[in-house]
Amino acid sequence: MNLLNKFMNMDRRWIYLITAICVIIPFLIPIGLPTYTTPPARNIYEKIDNTSDGQVVLLSFDYDAAVLPELYPMTITILNHCFNRNIKVILMSLYMQGIGIAQVALEDVKREFPEKKEGIDYTLLPYVPGGALVILGIGEDIHKTFPTDYYGTLIDSLPMMREIRNFDQISLAISFSGGGVSRTWVTYANQRYGANVAAGVTAVMAAENYPYLQTKQLIGMLGGLKGAAEYENLVEKNLKLKTRKAACIGMDAQSAVHIMMIVFIVLANIAYFAGRRRKK
Amino acid sequence: MSHDPWVWVAAFLTLCIFSFLYKDNPFYRFAEHLLIGATLGYALPLVWKNIVTPKIIVPLQHHEYWLLIPLCLGLLYIARLIPKYAWLSRWPMAFALGTGSGIAIPLSLQAGIFKQMQGTMLTKAMLSPSITPTVHIIGNIVMFVGVITTLIYFYFSIKHTGTVGKVARIGVWYIMLAFGATFGYTVMARVSLLIGRFQFLLHDWLGVIK
Image 1 (cartoon, rainbow over the protein chains, first blue to last red):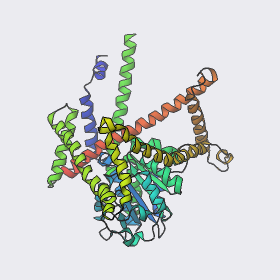
Image 2: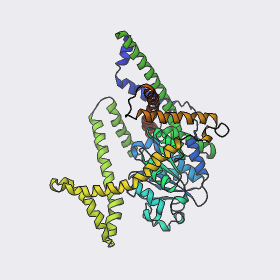
Image 3: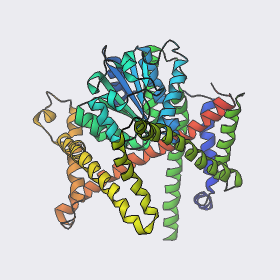
Image 4: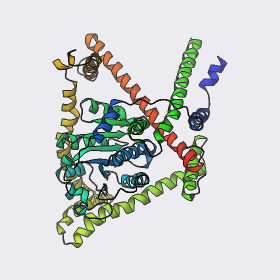
């Protein structure tokens, strides 16, 4: 009983320390626990893979640095997949800070694909304020919403953008977001223009997005680090991923911390009920 | 180990933030204040470069004077700072609310309610074993029951007693399951952020992992 009492009154800093150990050890001694691919991740992969000539994939970096560890690995892997398949990509953001992240992601992936050229293989669009209005603008005419690209070049002069006018030429729009922005894409791009929309979201937001998967308003979803790991595995299996598999590497630590938490929850409940019985 | 001084700066700031887990200290407060300052410092020039210059200054230089109307309307927000003229700020607010609602309400209803209702409705095909796999049929029924019982739980015009109470109780179980799923995902999200920082420290900074 004394031990249970001690456990219930444990200084929380011990929990922080144990958590840190549970994260560090799997990094130093990788276990390689398997990560299974789920249909929402596979749907995105197949949709990108089946993008026809004359169509592009739009990636919207609707997040800032606060959720970088969760969303950056999936953005890198999807960009990698598109470049691997020679699919043209439009990069944009409804968040002001997102453009900087898109630029860094491009630089990272271009190290593996130095032949990819701005305006021919990809276009980085500048930040335009308005959120939902920007999506509606793309639905009407992307050239009017974004007269120039991020670097100030007239969008009409970019070879890959000449034939791209609206969502009809965009095979898939993926919103990476740490908030509810993916729902904005569902509401305005999918509902208004019938665009194919997918979401790459933080794990916190994943549960809220499942209803949209069921109604097929989202064709696919990557939820947090687990979703990113699933996509890394898909690309690795089919195309040989050239970049570092940051999400897969992190999944061992993720599992270790989850086991630790389950143990703590079970022990805390045993201690609580034992303490309550003793009081009676 | 990294030779990039900026990686060292980032590692130092990460450790400063982590030090709060032991207890509040000047290193943590320094990093926290630096983050707030850097965020603002980053945002202001971006607003100027991406919004004020291309959307206002450049068009005005090209004699697009009609832009003065929305510009003046927007400037009325600042009237809130002067108590005597604070009422003027209601005009741009009314404009934003009116246009925003006009655009959002019909589409949000379509995407968030009608489409979801449609997704919940059971059709003959959804329950037919020859068309739909058994596991999906069970899933469709579970979802249908969940939506109905949860909605009944949130219907407060009838007292939750008798049959209604029992049905509402099932709704509560569904809500608890939803909370559990959300909590599980939230744990995963927070741990992912920690993993991200440790990956940075062990890979980018110290180089002890691949």
